[in-house]
Length: 199
Image (cartoon, rainbow, N blue to C red):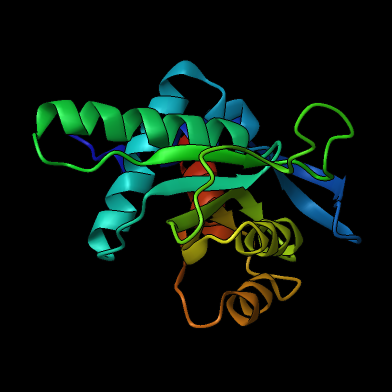
């Protein structure tokens, strides 16, 4: 049976990858576009994302109390990783739960006025997640906000790394030696998309 990661790649290539001419949020244009939300918000895609990210963290021996990121690209990833950790804890007693938190783009002006919603504990070890990394700006913003809340960022993870606009280098410079991991590169998704078209 195909792994969570292999199944996720097939779904991303089918539902999230498009060829054409597209303007990017980081500036410039591209001959392809990846909208991970069509996969991360897909019932089966969300399940696969949660388990694939947990497996990636396990393979890299990263232990964390929580997973979080900048709204809204990170929202479904955070929810699905937290849910997958709960499922795993039921299947394997002793497995740790990984809670979730979301980072607003700005502090809200009512209620508690917090920028971090959900899990937030000073000294907690956390992983920052994002859907696509191009320049790395949203991942870096989330890293800074988590640190400002007193949490320790032990890794950053993206679903797809575009391998352009200096994204990896920018995130690695911001994360101070903690690992930056990608489930896939854009070329991985493109190759699977082309394979599906030709099969």
